[in-house]
Amino acid sequence: MRNLILLLALLLPAQALAQDWAKSRLKKSPRHLEWVELKHGDRTLKAFVAYPERAEKAKVIVVIHEIFGLTDWARLMTDELAAAGYIAIAPDLLSGSGPNGGGTASLGGVDEARKAIRELPPDQITADLKAAVDYGLKLPAANGQVSVAGFCWGGTESFRFATNEKRLKAAYVFYGTGPDQVASIACPVYGFYAENDARVGATIEATRALMKKAGKTYQPVTYKGAGHGFMRAGEDPEGSAENKQARDQAWKRWMDLLK
Image (tube, rainbow, N blue to C red):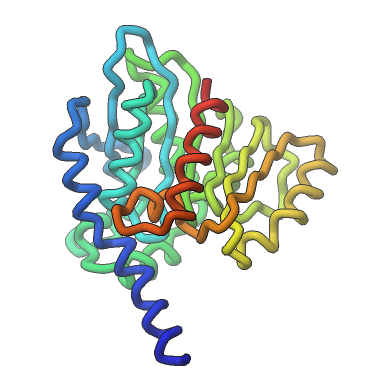
């Protein structure tokens, strides 16, 4: 049993990084995808941007990556949002954390990425995300509305960012935990959670009570049979039926909320 647990612990990060299927889909995208540099203070932040194919100006979504950094799947998510009609901006919050000032791609593996993520100063994360919001709102193709969406570690950060950014129209939290202080949140928060994710799931009711007491909008939904990371795992060709179903249901809900 112990060996099985160790094997499963090793497989999760391996599956998170083994994303050839995501890279292949990105290469086939007909949309405009580009890397940009966002500067604030003395820091340079790299970000991946995906544009929709539409004549009208579009809403902006800032995408916060998982604890694994800005992976191929995180970039694929920006492209999927662009396919749905939105401008998506995914900053590499590990910019400068790798060798020679590199970001996620230079770190070499999941353990290095997770270690680097845990060393990020919260104020720097907030400043990076504000820089992404600033950039998005200034784009000629943007319509002046911006929201944030985060996954895993990024889900927690999207909830926290809502306490620091008044310009957000909404915050979408995918299997992330809530902050202790919510009084400054000025937008609705929508949660997407996995049934088989006890660590995060155990925090939902306390967060619900805290948000209700503060008079804030918080609407969590838990997806039956899904595990943590189901938005990514549900797109993996080898993903479970439960994660695939949860991903599809969560995507539909998200698209309805974004309208």
